[in-house]
Each structure stands twice: as structure tokens, then as C-alpha cells.
Length: 115
Image 1 (cartoon, rainbow, N blue to C red):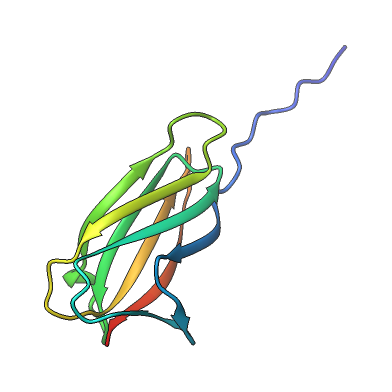
Image 2: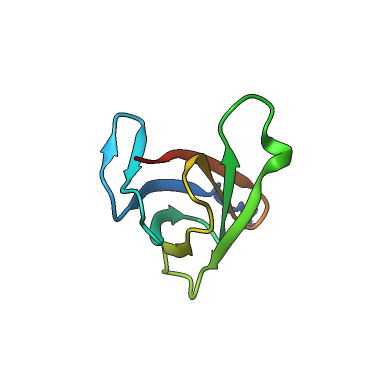
């Protein structure tokens, strides 16, 4: 009698997040006057990436704004991206990344500021 193993889905895993601009410590430094920025995310076991912009400060989750998303194109696609047209005069915000898998959501954050 053979034993059948249950199929388990793997947890989404964000491998890397980067932008067109360099990191300065824990902040991504965006030159003043920049009109758009592209965010790149490499994530495994992920079907969709949501990109949320959240103001810095305490208890600002309710002020978050969904600025875009990217959906996996096929089973081997682990690269997600979003080009965002900056609609604010300055940035001092967190970019909250949600990786959505079949049953589980994981997240990571990068910090953005415009000099």
C-alpha cells in the first residue's frame, strides 16, 4: 500500500527589493523633482505583489495608499515590478510590499525619502 503525501503550498518569500536609486542606510534616496520610480521585487512562491505607500510616523497604517500591484505571469516568474508616477511634492514614506501566495501573505518594507 503506497502512502500519498499531502501537497503543501510554500510560503511566499521576498528575496530582494530594489529601485533605480541607491540606498542611504535604511532609506532609498530619491532626487528632488523625480517624477517616477520603478520598484523591483524578486519573490518566490508568490502570485501577486501589492505596493502600499504609508506615511512615516506612528499608527499610520490606516493612511496607507495602494499605488499598484503586479501579478505573476507564469509558474516560473519570480520578478515583479511597478513604475509609479510620484503624485506628491515630497516623499518621507514607507513602501510596504505584500507578497501573496496561494494561502499565505508575507511582507517587507523599504523607506523612501526625497532630498
